[in-house]
Amino acid sequence: MQKPSLIINRKFYERDTLKVAQDLLGCFLVRDYRGKIWRALITEVEAYLGEKDLASHASRGRTPRTETMYGEPGYAYVYMIYGIYHCLNIVTEKKDFPAAVLIRSVRIESVDHRKTNGPGKLCNFLKIDRKLNRWDLTKGEKLWLEPRDPKIKLSKIQKSKRIGIDYAQHCREYLWRFSIKS
Image 1 (tube, rainbow, N blue to C red):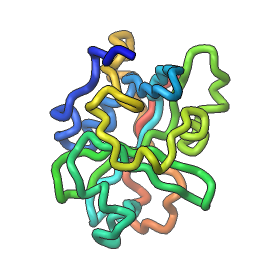
Image 2 (image 1 turned 90 degrees about the horizontal axis):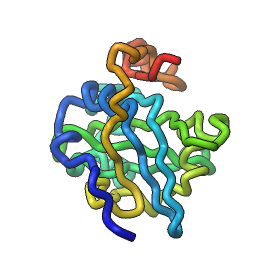
Image 3 (image 1 turned 45 degrees about the vertical axis):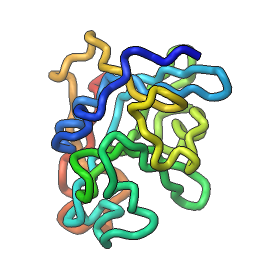
Image 4 (image 1 turned 120 degrees about the vertical axis):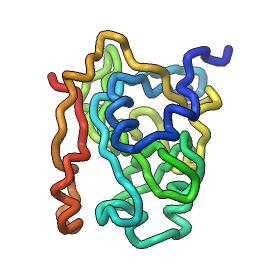
């Protein structure tokens, strides 16, 4: 397979996590799996920002599980929840500062959106698992991101509270979930 030419570079991820999260909307998550290439339009994300964010895995500090979050930006942080679902996050900002953006939903042409409208569902459909944890998304192999569709306008971004983090005290009120308005 020829290496793709429109890969989002590391500089894109080396920025403020909330900005990266919004800028990921409308971009394409591309998965090359056994010769089949899926281009998935990112439609919903959530930001997780540092050890003070009580909803972040990093809120308990550096652990073997969170080590990827403390690494270089532009890498995949893939973990398992409930013992059955994988979730894909993209590491942002700078090395040794744990920040990432969870990919919550994507749309794939000719695929029923109910198969990709949740972080576990999209990972299942795209065959993303822990083997891709610490994967360099700037390599253009197996898993990477391509720039936003120019038809997607930033004015169409909706901000809301993150999902499933009731335990996170005041952090559950942060409007760090971003989605493309329908």
